[in-house]
Image 1 (cartoon, rainbow, N blue to C red):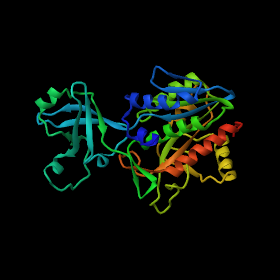
Image 2: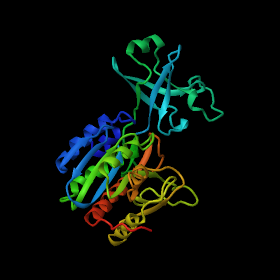
Image 3: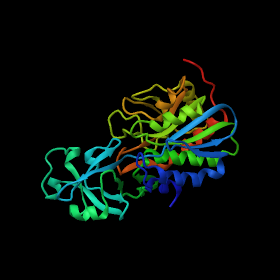
Image 4: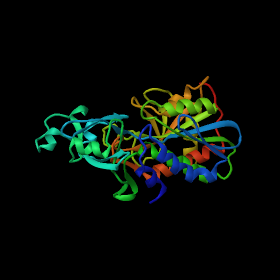
Length: 339
Protein backbone atom coordinates (compact mmCIF):
# COMPACT_ATOMS: atom_id res chain seq x y z
CA UNK A 1 0.00 0.00 0.00
CA UNK A 2 1.48 3.36 -1.00
CA UNK A 3 1.30 6.50 1.12
CA UNK A 4 -1.67 7.96 -0.73
CA UNK A 5 -3.73 4.81 -0.19
CA UNK A 6 -2.69 4.70 3.46
CA UNK A 7 -3.93 8.26 3.97
CA UNK A 8 -7.20 7.63 2.10
CA UNK A 9 -8.02 4.44 3.97
CA UNK A 10 -7.31 5.87 7.43
CA UNK A 11 -10.20 7.25 9.48
CA UNK A 12 -10.24 10.93 10.37
CA UNK A 13 -13.61 12.66 10.50
CA UNK A 14 -13.67 16.31 11.60
CA UNK A 15 -12.82 16.48 15.29
CA UNK A 16 -11.10 13.08 15.23
CA UNK A 17 -7.99 13.67 13.10
CA UNK A 18 -5.43 12.01 15.39
CA UNK A 19 -4.93 8.95 13.17
CA UNK A 20 -4.06 11.11 10.19
CA UNK A 21 -1.77 13.31 12.24
CA UNK A 22 0.31 10.28 13.30
CA UNK A 23 0.77 9.11 9.71
CA UNK A 24 1.83 12.57 8.53
CA UNK A 25 4.30 13.14 11.38
CA UNK A 26 5.96 9.81 10.68
CA UNK A 27 6.32 10.64 6.99
CA UNK A 28 7.35 14.31 7.11
CA UNK A 29 9.54 14.60 10.22
CA UNK A 30 12.81 13.89 8.37
CA UNK A 31 12.20 16.64 5.84
CA UNK A 32 11.38 19.67 8.01
CA UNK A 33 13.21 21.63 10.68
CA UNK A 34 10.53 21.48 13.34
CA UNK A 35 7.02 20.17 13.97
CA UNK A 36 4.38 21.08 16.50
CA UNK A 37 0.68 20.51 17.09
CA UNK A 38 -1.26 23.57 18.18
CA UNK A 39 -4.16 23.73 20.63
CA UNK A 40 -6.71 23.20 17.86
CA UNK A 41 -4.99 20.03 16.66
CA UNK A 42 -3.40 21.49 13.51
CA UNK A 43 -0.08 19.91 12.56
CA UNK A 44 2.43 22.61 11.61
CA UNK A 45 5.74 21.61 10.01
CA UNK A 46 8.29 24.32 9.20
CA UNK A 47 11.23 24.58 6.83
CA UNK A 48 13.51 27.50 7.72
CA UNK A 49 14.23 30.19 5.14
CA UNK A 50 13.98 33.87 4.35
CA UNK A 51 11.20 36.28 3.38
CA UNK A 52 8.49 35.80 2.20
CA UNK A 53 6.92 33.43 4.74
CA UNK A 54 4.77 30.94 2.81
CA UNK A 55 1.91 28.87 4.23
CA UNK A 56 0.73 25.75 2.43
CA UNK A 57 -2.41 24.21 3.91
CA UNK A 58 -4.27 20.93 3.41
CA UNK A 59 -7.00 19.67 5.72
CA UNK A 60 -6.73 16.29 7.43
CA UNK A 61 -10.42 15.80 8.17
CA UNK A 62 -13.01 14.04 6.06
CA UNK A 63 -16.79 14.09 6.02
CA UNK A 64 -18.46 11.51 8.25
CA UNK A 65 -21.15 10.57 10.72
CA UNK A 66 -21.74 10.48 14.47
CA UNK A 67 -24.24 8.52 16.56
CA UNK A 68 -27.36 10.40 17.72
CA UNK A 69 -29.12 7.56 19.54
CA UNK A 70 -30.48 4.00 19.46
CA UNK A 71 -34.19 3.19 19.02
CA UNK A 72 -36.11 0.46 20.84
CA UNK A 73 -35.71 -1.68 17.71
CA UNK A 74 -31.92 -1.28 17.71
CA UNK A 75 -31.80 1.17 14.85
CA UNK A 76 -28.91 3.62 15.22
CA UNK A 77 -29.71 7.18 14.15
CA UNK A 78 -26.88 9.50 13.20
CA UNK A 79 -25.94 13.07 12.36
CA UNK A 80 -23.72 14.14 9.48
CA UNK A 81 -20.35 15.80 9.93
CA UNK A 82 -19.82 17.87 6.81
CA UNK A 83 -21.93 17.90 3.67
CA UNK A 84 -23.25 14.48 2.61
CA UNK A 85 -26.19 13.69 0.36
CA UNK A 86 -28.51 10.96 1.74
CA UNK A 87 -28.37 9.08 -1.58
CA UNK A 88 -24.61 8.65 -1.20
CA UNK A 89 -25.11 6.84 2.11
CA UNK A 90 -27.72 4.20 1.29
CA UNK A 91 -26.21 0.70 1.35
CA UNK A 92 -22.86 1.85 2.72
CA UNK A 93 -21.05 -0.40 5.18
CA UNK A 94 -19.87 1.33 8.33
CA UNK A 95 -18.17 0.59 11.61
CA UNK A 96 -18.90 2.36 14.89
CA UNK A 97 -16.05 3.03 17.27
CA UNK A 98 -16.83 2.04 20.86
CA UNK A 99 -14.67 2.04 23.99
CA UNK A 100 -15.78 -1.40 25.18
CA UNK A 101 -15.92 -3.48 21.99
CA UNK A 102 -13.76 -1.56 19.53
CA UNK A 103 -15.53 -1.54 16.16
CA UNK A 104 -19.14 -2.65 15.66
CA UNK A 105 -20.19 -3.18 12.03
CA UNK A 106 -23.42 -2.24 10.31
CA UNK A 107 -25.05 -1.01 7.09
CA UNK A 108 -26.90 2.21 6.35
CA UNK A 109 -30.47 1.65 5.18
CA UNK A 110 -34.02 2.96 5.60
CA UNK A 111 -37.37 1.36 6.30
CA UNK A 112 -38.52 0.80 2.70
CA UNK A 113 -35.21 -0.70 1.62
CA UNK A 114 -35.03 -2.88 4.72
CA UNK A 115 -38.44 -4.29 3.82
CA UNK A 116 -37.58 -4.65 0.08
CA UNK A 117 -40.04 -1.94 -0.98
CA UNK A 118 -39.39 0.38 -3.92
CA UNK A 119 -38.14 3.90 -3.16
CA UNK A 120 -40.53 6.34 -4.81
CA UNK A 121 -39.03 9.53 -3.40
CA UNK A 122 -35.58 10.73 -2.52
CA UNK A 123 -35.05 9.77 1.14
CA UNK A 124 -34.50 12.40 3.79
CA UNK A 125 -31.50 12.27 6.06
CA UNK A 126 -33.57 11.59 9.18
CA UNK A 127 -35.11 8.51 7.53
CA UNK A 128 -31.77 6.72 7.36
CA UNK A 129 -30.42 4.48 10.12
CA UNK A 130 -27.69 1.93 10.76
CA UNK A 131 -28.70 -1.71 11.08
CA UNK A 132 -26.21 -3.93 12.94
CA UNK A 133 -28.60 -6.86 13.34
CA UNK A 134 -28.48 -6.34 17.11
CA UNK A 135 -31.10 -5.27 19.64
CA UNK A 136 -30.98 -2.11 21.72
CA UNK A 137 -29.86 -4.10 24.79
CA UNK A 138 -27.12 -5.88 22.83
CA UNK A 139 -25.84 -2.58 21.47
CA UNK A 140 -25.84 -1.12 24.97
CA UNK A 141 -23.71 -4.02 26.20
CA UNK A 142 -21.22 -3.30 23.43
CA UNK A 143 -20.99 0.29 24.64
CA UNK A 144 -22.54 2.12 21.68
CA UNK A 145 -23.65 5.56 22.79
CA UNK A 146 -24.45 9.05 21.58
CA UNK A 147 -21.33 10.75 20.28
CA UNK A 148 -19.54 7.67 18.92
CA UNK A 149 -17.86 8.30 15.57
CA UNK A 150 -18.96 6.23 12.58
CA UNK A 151 -16.32 4.97 10.13
CA UNK A 152 -16.96 4.39 6.42
CA UNK A 153 -15.76 0.94 5.32
CA UNK A 154 -14.29 1.68 1.91
CA UNK A 155 -10.84 0.74 0.59
CA UNK A 156 -9.06 2.64 -2.17
CA UNK A 157 -8.93 0.84 -5.53
CA UNK A 158 -7.76 1.53 -9.08
CA UNK A 159 -10.41 2.00 -11.77
CA UNK A 160 -9.80 1.12 -15.41
CA UNK A 161 -6.10 1.85 -15.10
CA UNK A 162 -3.60 2.48 -12.31
CA UNK A 163 -3.81 6.18 -13.12
CA UNK A 164 -7.36 6.46 -11.71
CA UNK A 165 -8.01 5.90 -8.01
CA UNK A 166 -11.36 5.61 -6.25
CA UNK A 167 -12.31 5.62 -2.60
CA UNK A 168 -13.24 7.76 0.36
CA UNK A 169 -11.59 10.86 1.85
CA UNK A 170 -10.02 12.13 -1.37
CA UNK A 171 -11.17 15.45 0.11
CA UNK A 172 -8.59 16.22 1.34
CA UNK A 173 -6.09 13.42 1.92
CA UNK A 174 -4.95 14.16 -1.61
CA UNK A 175 -3.84 17.59 -0.39
CA UNK A 176 -2.08 16.04 2.62
CA UNK A 177 -0.23 13.65 0.29
CA UNK A 178 0.80 16.53 -2.00
CA UNK A 179 2.31 18.47 0.91
CA UNK A 180 4.20 15.46 2.26
CA UNK A 181 5.68 14.64 -1.14
CA UNK A 182 6.50 18.32 -1.71
CA UNK A 183 8.43 18.47 1.57
CA UNK A 184 10.37 15.36 0.55
CA UNK A 185 11.33 16.75 -2.85
CA UNK A 186 12.40 20.23 -1.74
CA UNK A 187 16.15 19.91 -1.30
CA UNK A 188 16.49 23.36 0.18
CA UNK A 189 13.70 25.74 1.14
CA UNK A 190 14.58 29.18 -0.20
CA UNK A 191 11.83 30.76 1.86
CA UNK A 192 10.44 30.04 5.29
CA UNK A 193 7.78 27.49 4.42
CA UNK A 194 5.01 26.12 6.61
CA UNK A 195 3.36 22.83 5.71
CA UNK A 196 0.10 23.02 7.65
CA UNK A 197 -2.29 20.11 8.02
CA UNK A 198 -5.49 21.61 9.34
CA UNK A 199 -8.46 20.27 11.30
CA UNK A 200 -12.22 20.72 10.94
CA UNK A 201 -12.28 22.22 7.46
CA UNK A 202 -15.41 20.32 6.53
CA UNK A 203 -17.49 21.93 9.25
CA UNK A 204 -16.25 25.52 9.09
CA UNK A 205 -12.60 26.01 8.01
CA UNK A 206 -11.74 26.25 11.71
CA UNK A 207 -8.18 24.89 11.74
CA UNK A 208 -7.08 27.29 9.03
CA UNK A 209 -8.34 30.25 11.08
CA UNK A 210 -6.23 29.48 14.14
CA UNK A 211 -3.09 28.29 12.33
CA UNK A 212 -2.97 31.28 9.96
CA UNK A 213 -3.26 33.66 12.89
CA UNK A 214 -0.26 32.12 14.67
CA UNK A 215 1.91 31.79 11.53
CA UNK A 216 1.05 35.21 10.06
CA UNK A 217 2.19 34.28 6.53
CA UNK A 218 3.04 36.66 3.70
CA UNK A 219 1.21 34.52 1.17
CA UNK A 220 -0.69 31.24 1.30
CA UNK A 221 -1.94 28.41 -0.88
CA UNK A 222 -4.58 25.88 0.11
CA UNK A 223 -4.13 22.49 -1.55
CA UNK A 224 -7.54 20.87 -1.85
CA UNK A 225 -9.88 19.21 -4.36
CA UNK A 226 -12.70 20.45 -6.55
CA UNK A 227 -15.61 18.85 -8.36
CA UNK A 228 -15.44 17.91 -12.03
CA UNK A 229 -18.18 18.52 -14.57
CA UNK A 230 -16.90 16.14 -17.27
CA UNK A 231 -20.31 14.96 -18.40
CA UNK A 232 -22.08 18.31 -18.63
CA UNK A 233 -22.66 20.11 -21.93
CA UNK A 234 -20.46 23.02 -20.85
CA UNK A 235 -17.66 21.11 -19.17
CA UNK A 236 -14.82 23.21 -17.75
CA UNK A 237 -13.14 20.95 -15.14
CA UNK A 238 -12.08 17.50 -16.28
CA UNK A 239 -10.57 14.48 -14.57
CA UNK A 240 -7.03 14.13 -15.90
CA UNK A 241 -7.03 17.67 -17.28
CA UNK A 242 -4.51 18.90 -14.71
CA UNK A 243 -4.81 20.63 -11.34
CA UNK A 244 -7.14 23.62 -11.02
CA UNK A 245 -6.11 27.04 -9.81
CA UNK A 246 -8.98 28.88 -8.15
CA UNK A 247 -9.87 32.19 -9.73
CA UNK A 248 -13.12 32.49 -7.76
CA UNK A 249 -15.27 30.21 -5.64
CA UNK A 250 -18.50 30.81 -3.72
CA UNK A 251 -16.81 32.79 -0.95
CA UNK A 252 -13.62 34.41 -2.25
CA UNK A 253 -11.73 35.86 -5.18
CA UNK A 254 -8.17 34.56 -5.16
CA UNK A 255 -5.01 36.62 -5.30
CA UNK A 256 -4.22 37.31 -8.94
CA UNK A 257 -0.42 37.47 -8.47
CA UNK A 258 -0.26 33.90 -7.16
CA UNK A 259 -2.74 32.64 -9.77
CA UNK A 260 -0.76 34.25 -12.59
CA UNK A 261 2.43 32.67 -11.30
CA UNK A 262 0.81 29.22 -11.55
CA UNK A 263 -0.47 29.98 -15.04
CA UNK A 264 2.95 31.17 -16.28
CA UNK A 265 4.78 28.19 -14.75
CA UNK A 266 2.31 25.74 -16.24
CA UNK A 267 2.78 27.28 -19.70
CA UNK A 268 6.58 27.42 -19.44
CA UNK A 269 7.01 23.83 -18.25
CA UNK A 270 4.09 22.38 -20.27
CA UNK A 271 2.14 21.26 -17.21
CA UNK A 272 -1.62 20.94 -17.78
CA UNK A 273 -3.58 23.45 -15.69
CA UNK A 274 -7.28 24.25 -15.45
CA UNK A 275 -8.82 27.53 -14.31
CA UNK A 276 -11.66 27.18 -11.83
CA UNK A 277 -14.43 29.75 -11.54
CA UNK A 278 -17.15 28.32 -9.32
CA UNK A 279 -20.34 29.36 -7.57
CA UNK A 280 -20.12 26.52 -5.05
CA UNK A 281 -17.95 25.71 -2.05
CA UNK A 282 -14.75 27.20 -0.71
CA UNK A 283 -11.48 26.12 0.90
CA UNK A 284 -9.13 26.89 3.77
CA UNK A 285 -7.80 29.71 1.57
CA UNK A 286 -10.81 31.78 2.60
CA UNK A 287 -10.04 31.64 6.32
CA UNK A 288 -6.35 32.28 5.71
CA UNK A 289 -7.03 35.24 3.42
CA UNK A 290 -8.89 37.16 6.13
CA UNK A 291 -6.48 36.39 8.96
CA UNK A 292 -5.09 39.40 10.82
CA UNK A 293 -4.77 42.25 8.31
CA UNK A 294 -5.21 39.87 5.37
CA UNK A 295 -3.08 37.30 3.54
CA UNK A 296 -2.75 37.03 -0.27
CA UNK A 297 -4.16 33.55 -0.89
CA UNK A 298 -5.36 31.10 -3.50
CA UNK A 299 -6.17 27.40 -3.81
CA UNK A 300 -4.68 24.72 -6.04
CA UNK A 301 -7.21 21.92 -6.39
CA UNK A 302 -7.18 18.39 -7.78
CA UNK A 303 -10.33 17.50 -9.78
CA UNK A 304 -12.48 14.77 -8.19
CA UNK A 305 -15.57 13.04 -9.54
CA UNK A 306 -18.31 12.03 -7.09
CA UNK A 307 -17.05 14.56 -4.54
CA UNK A 308 -18.23 14.11 -0.93
CA UNK A 309 -19.01 10.44 -1.40
CA UNK A 310 -17.17 7.19 -0.64
CA UNK A 311 -16.65 6.52 -4.34
CA UNK A 312 -14.67 9.59 -5.30
CA UNK A 313 -12.40 9.37 -8.35
CA UNK A 314 -9.13 11.19 -9.02
CA UNK A 315 -6.22 11.06 -11.45
CA UNK A 316 -2.74 10.30 -10.14
CA UNK A 317 -1.38 12.45 -12.98
CA UNK A 318 -3.34 15.48 -11.71
CA UNK A 319 -1.92 14.86 -8.24
CA UNK A 320 1.65 14.56 -9.57
CA UNK A 321 1.30 17.74 -11.62
CA UNK A 322 0.11 19.60 -8.51
CA UNK A 323 3.33 18.66 -6.75
CA UNK A 324 5.41 19.78 -9.74
CA UNK A 325 3.71 23.18 -9.94
CA UNK A 326 4.08 23.86 -6.23
CA UNK A 327 7.74 22.87 -6.29
CA UNK A 328 8.39 25.29 -9.15
CA UNK A 329 6.52 28.12 -7.42
CA UNK A 330 8.44 27.65 -4.17
CA UNK A 331 11.73 27.97 -6.03
CA UNK A 332 10.72 31.47 -7.16
CA UNK A 333 7.70 32.80 -5.22
CA UNK A 334 5.63 35.54 -6.88
CA UNK A 335 5.83 39.17 -5.89
CA UNK A 336 2.44 40.23 -4.61
CA UNK A 337 0.89 43.21 -6.36
CA UNK A 338 -2.43 44.82 -5.48
CA UNK A 339 -4.98 44.76 -8.29
